[in-house]
Image 1 (cartoon, rainbow, N blue to C red):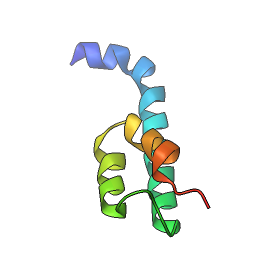
Image 2 (image 1 turned 135 degrees about the vertical axis):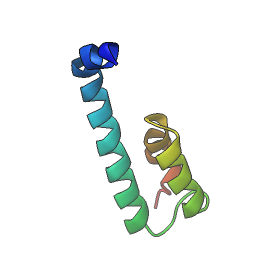
Image 3 (image 1 turned 120 degrees about the vertical axis):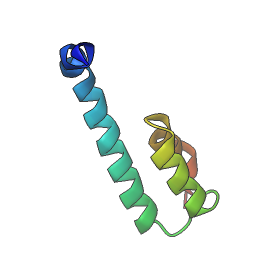
Length: 65
């Protein structure tokens, strides 16, 4: 527990970036009409594959018009 408290200032920015990425990706997923693949699958990827999930969604999940 002591190690977590000591490392919190180094971990906090990563956690904040991860949370922001997840929120922005979910909002975009809800608003966008078409995706490359089913929306439910992208929602699971965004939520459960930490930082890489939202990045994958923005790189390959969004369908270009």
